[in-house]
Amino acid sequence: MRKKIFFLVIIIIFILLASQQKIFVLTEVGGKYEIVTSARAEKNLPLEINFTHSVQKTPVIEELEFDGEKFILIRTKYKSHGVGLPFMESDGEFREEDGYFIMDNMNRPIENLSLRTGVGTNLTIKLDSEEIKLYEKYPAGTLIDFKVSSNLKMFFDKIFGRNF
Image (cartoon, rainbow, N blue to C red; front, top):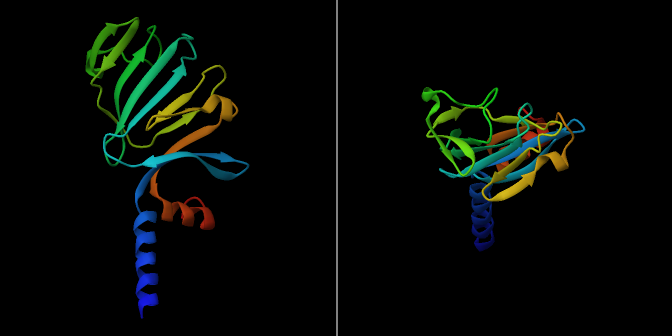
């Protein structure tokens, strides 16, 4: 009887740990998805995306936070104005600081976050203080997806296919 209870407790602990929500950073390599990194899906979890703008050739830093369901773009910092960079009053609060233009308090929800590595863009992410230089690990054009899931669901996804 004790062995059965012990075994049941172990199974319950495993299921609880495996079902905790995490943020997975994924990419496809050779037709199979690969986990680049992961972090616990905690409210206010920071994500920083750094890249070199493809037109201006200057650094851009985007700061996001996880709200429990999706990422929210909080702030964008950049060195020069240009295509695709926020500048309107409706985008947030604009200021200049330490040589950067900063658009703060953007509070822009991002339902599905996907990135692509590019030629000369030096795409880097920092998730929960772990910095990953994606441009060094993956060739230009590689799709990087952010997915909220559990270890258990990811396990079943891997066994039965990505969209299980």
